[in-house]
Amino acid sequence: MVCALYAVLGALLLIKFSFDVVRLRGLYHVSYGDGGFTELQSAIRIHGNAVEYIPVALLLLLFMEMNGAEVWMIHICGLMTIAGRLMHYYGFHHRLVRWRRSGMGATWCALLLMVAANLWYMPWELVFSVR
Figure 1 (cartoon, rainbow, N blue to C red):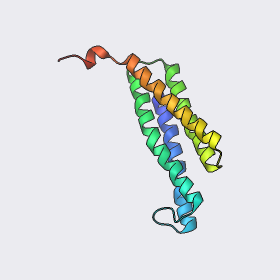
Figure 2: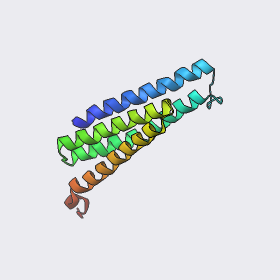
Figure 3: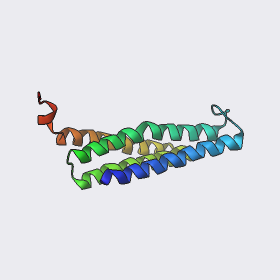
Figure 4: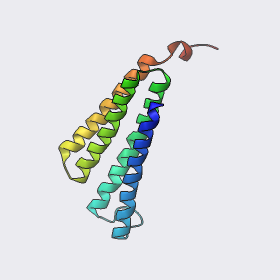
């Protein structure tokens, strides 16, 4: 399954972002919240933002694959999602609004493409069957 590749990549991003939060909490001796440290605030939001977008993207990607979308379409949407999350991370981490904006744009574009593909490939005859 092609989607598994992007699930693994998404999980690796989440692990990296989570590790960044844990490392900074240890560095600044902060158990709860952000302690007012800008670097920790950014790490928490980078991780939180990824948690908000990666799972729904993977679910849509999996449904695309299950509904019979073309493999190249799955790769394009998966790559756009991962690239978008990486661009968002880079922009947030380095305070580059253009990169953050581009990362969010790529993520939203991928989500919209996956929604459209799922609507296109959905087995409507099964969705509306009365059995």
